[in-house]
Image (cartoon, rainbow, N blue to C red; front, side):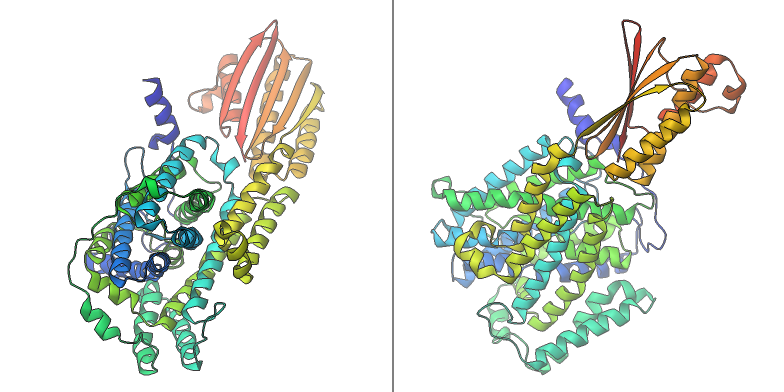
Length: 580
């Protein structure tokens, strides 16, 4: 029973903060757009998700050159993404963030696949390593009690920005601009520029079509791209060779083929995978909540648990690890379409594509310049969201180091990928290396964060002013949010006034800052103060002394995360905890 209570405390939905509908949203979480509108929006998400189909294709190509095996791997990977997407949408129980986040695949694992293919692990060995990675992700979720310390906004922001950088890298690959590639001609550049202009014009049109800007821009650009000769060679023959329906045969995990070096690469990628998921959850949470001021931990934990289960399922069937389609999340935020119904409809669409190799091939055969335009357009929105995440809190020197070094490490890999592929292939992706560096800088500098300051405060007529000035200086030095500083100062004013009414002569104050929270400890000689009133009533202000004191305690503690008291040898102690 205690275990169940602990799990409910950790994952339970009754601890979720109530969300407020923000202004300017076309479709909120619980809205139900008409079926034609929902289907159109789901198809737009699918168009974005299909861009990432190049990731499992590239991963499989590092293991085999057989088109049939590559297609089989792609279909299994799409099926895993559909399961991941459905798990995130679950709105009851301990699994699933409840947020409408489309699933897809991340480029962070390409170096791990390349290393596994080079060592001859095969798809069975890779499936076993993905399964181990998924189990590790599930276990790590239970270890992240104070999630915001391990994966704070700054790391999530760095990861989201580096996702945008990675998407730009994928766009460069589509245009042949990667090292060793053959750059496409001016026709491809014209298609890219034209497509982005169309997307921007539709987005700025302030019409119902604005939320379909990416899909409209892509569809309008396909015919000019084909006319300019930018289509895939032999596309018709490739499409004709694919069957309409085929149930992909899974690759069972082969633990005998597991190799230490690629397994280490997969496990190291967990930092990027979990930070990417956390970043996407926070981006959606921030966009969907008009009263948002800090991440709500419970949905994030449930989302990370579903993320680990989805990765483990991919390992069981032999597909690529799924994760959030951050580009699709950015699209939802940019267009204000956050309805769960849209993303629920996307789940069967993904399953249909997974069971129809011809449809999967149709998405893959989209002209490369059109794919590049979609990636470049969406990457900007993603990086802007990452900037907002990274700067959600005041950046003191330590937080600035986390962001600066993480971004610098990621960009370094982006501009010099060959050097990393040759020396540290396990970290040869901007997302993986940047996430690991940001995580390490945050972890190693955490001991420098916790600070404690004490004050002996005589309770005279100047006590309230002295306490306010004392904490104001601490808040400025610690880089606390303005709202946190106001809440703490208000609590101190109320409690000091209450203790002065009781004729307490001196108060021992202690403030402790621990990255994501502020703890205020008070000690005095005398009796404990009463518990806070269950609800505020105006008549308490003129009622009995107990009622007045209960009202004062309610005023002092209403914004605190917790409030506890204890008494020992005539000394009373009280502790308030405020989240920052």
